[in-house]
Length: 79
Image (cartoon, rainbow, N blue to C red; front, side):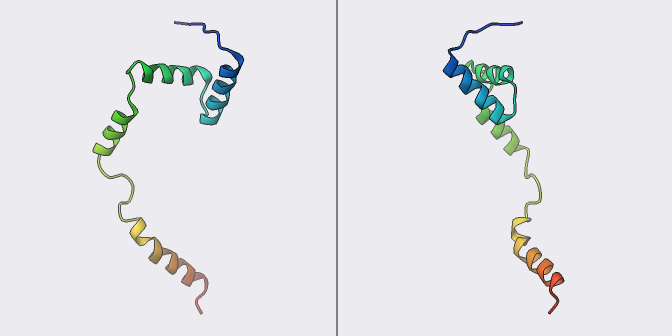
């Protein structure tokens, strides 16, 4: 369903700027904002759902960064 809303120029400029910054259309930006305000979308609940899914990526990746970088540097300069 199409809805028309008149915005003052300052608000429309901010809308255009923020939508471009996020890489979404103005329409999608407005829909997302309305869903949040109306309680249809809760970012905190989405975050909890993602966290419950379990670990993502390589859990020990950061622990091995130092050793990995040293090995790569040594491989480039064997002296």
